[in-house]
Image (tube, rainbow, N blue to C red):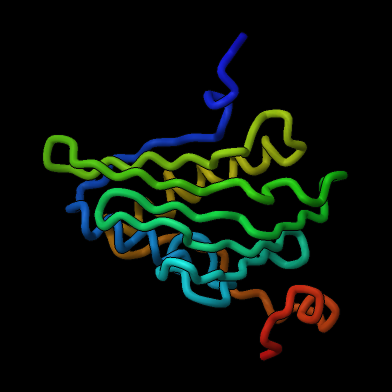
Length: 167
């Protein structure tokens, strides 16, 4: 029987920057994941809201931070508009483990609970690979990532449902 923990999505990057720069870069989700984020992404106990149009909406909370070593984010709420089970991702964790390898920084990203049984697995797998291997790596190394851009506000119904400030 295989160990289910091996099925979580995971990817590793090595960046040519010191560990503190990498650690601080990860916490700046707006710079490498999406400009459509409301709330703090860098304070333990704080929750932020991410959305991509009405395709993907989620609330994520920073639950553990060990300086220059580890960041753990818990997905509190989530909704996809393309899966039968809209709740995939809820209670999964985004884990970043950092270490120094030969003068460079290695980042192991694991989306714990994102497993192949999930309907969103393939699209999420491709998306995370692109964001982590491409955008996050570029942001840490050259100061410019490729986050999703702002694409206009949410509709009033979504604002109300997710308890968001209506800007």
